[in-house]
Length: 288
Image (cartoon, rainbow, N blue to C red):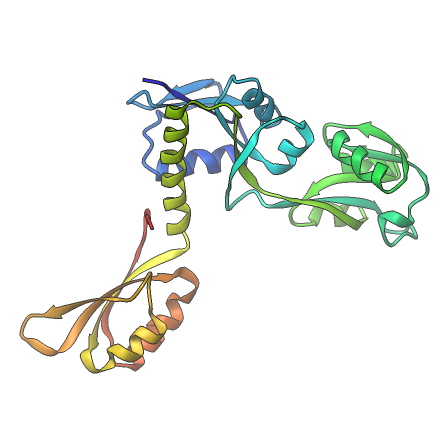
């Protein structure tokens, strides 16, 4: 059996999210600790390799792993020759250009020609400022990038932000956005036919979990006369499933999948139409 080798981050919130996604998709990986380097499903079909997030694109490019889960920003920075095969619904952030709040510049184009830029993304930052015609001295740092302007190490920062709280605490402001990033799945260029098939099966299982997280399963007893109106606001995946009730020809049971953010309104509407016995359940997976 040809095994699919999957590289994922060895620690951090992204690692936890990915491992949880695999578990929810029914992939039976053994439990792991921080020192675990590799685990394999019981059927031997998939193997997880735990490495630094920054190393994953190169691991995939160099065929140490067949596919990898990491951030889009990491992939772009690495310049690795890999294929992006799936966007995930977590790990959203933005790569931005930051300066001190009191600096009198509104956009990156307004910056002086000669600048000092502190960043953990030297390739992206270098390319960005070169296109703007700036002579940027790139100062590569591995962390605490936001404090460098106050220390006099740099007058511009290129960094990742999600909430903006770190910016405010360090009295910085954003003057441009370079890219939007989230978790992605990448693959090496020359997967075999079996590896491609296993990858497709894996992505289908993951998509089923991701789609299900945005849905709820609703069941209710409703008057048969209200079905046309109910269908107008509860279409489900196509239309509600309708089932008859024993010894009751005036009511039916409906089963329907609804968007999670519309559950409350749907319940109120159903109750107004005489709906009773309303049940709301989570959806573990949903295969379209």
